[in-house]
Image (cartoon, rainbow, N blue to C red; front, side, top):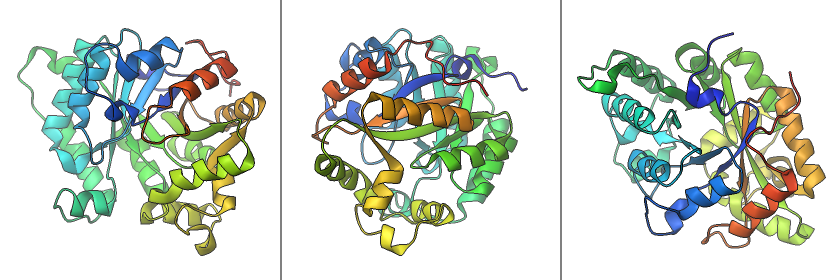
Length: 310
């Protein structure tokens, strides 16, 4: 079994949070969203890069506001900076903040690459392979050049999962079911596997569907996700904006703490090393602080939370 980096080994068997809520409040190097998530017992904060803050600058702020929380980009867009900038930033962040940074890279999606950034979105697999190879050859004339860092890539399909197994420390999956987690483990071998899982804790069926449809609205318009869902057995009727009820039930866990714990345990049993929960609150324009607290209490979170051994 390969030796995990310190920043990944601390996450194995634990539960973190995936959220972009840090961008809903003023940037700060003290307190804030990251400190709140740390205080609740979650092990990591995974956050995206889309129309908001630059991810590596944001990571520095989140790390500065915490002392034990791992901070991971989920994902840093490879079209947003060259390979030298990415690897050298990762080295500096991990060396500065006591091995608490994880660089999650991804090819993103056509609208975020072409309309937002003005690049030509093409050959995502080839571009990711070339980017990782360039990182491996990147020079750095600074003190932390030899400091290890953790690198994972966003992967859904078999080819990107295989690339993650070949050239990275692991992969980060998103909007998948337990069967996909099992498939991912079979492809990546002993590499690190982080699985994102959306959650609505409690609430009525109607309220669950409001939050789930709202959550899936953007993603159902993206071909990368539709292609993966097709591989998972879904079809055109499921890809209406906001998703069908069937897609909502498959992608967003809904119920009490026992239902949530079962889904988490199922992902761990299927091969996940770490699970980051995307907790869907009542107002997408505000940090879901109360829901983070309720889930943390429901899971009786500690930094040593372990799923079933595999």
